[in-house]
Length: 240
Image 1: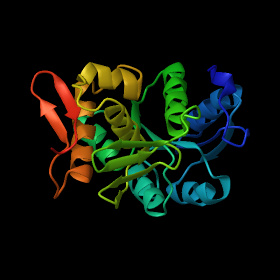
Image 2: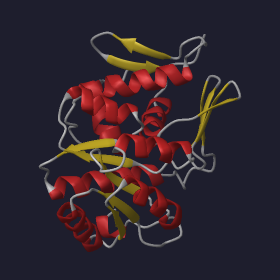
Image 3: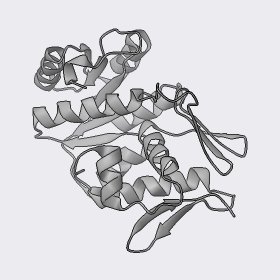
Image 4: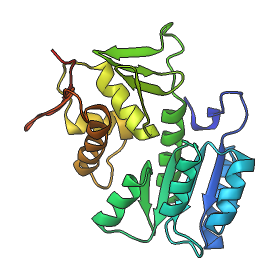
């Protein structure tokens, strides 16, 4: 599907919220996204961004980590606590592995470091939107099942043994890929290509990170379904 054809489920324009205290950056990114045919709102503080989220209802957001009132990770925590699960890309000057991990741990879906390529940023946002809206309309049954684990591709609900499990957009896409390939070893390279669709800056470490997130959510206190095959990759299989 061409980038210009990306629309909301109701056929309206994709809505993006760009949050950065550097007006030159917000205007640059906003201009590029409007060129893509998207509707864009901008904010320079965390409080302004949080208020606009409630009225604008974005499909994706770009958050600067360093904001004048509270940082982007605190903002994202408030967003997730309020029940909003749209994908979020962190845009920041911080480039340490710890910063990157903290951003993803906070519930972010991607991470771009300043100075950045505008083309790469837009491509990553398109990828996030595609993945967050992906459904298998040709499949009459949207529910994937592996053992007592279920995933609804239409409602984005995940359950194990009837207990609801809350996941982020990226965790959902990773779990979906694993559940479509039960009892099959998937390499880190395969997962990167399918879930992130590009060579992520953190490379294989981001796969390890998200596998650990999923393991805590679907296996904690239960017989494990998600297995590491040393030197080969990861495999999801039902409990025998």
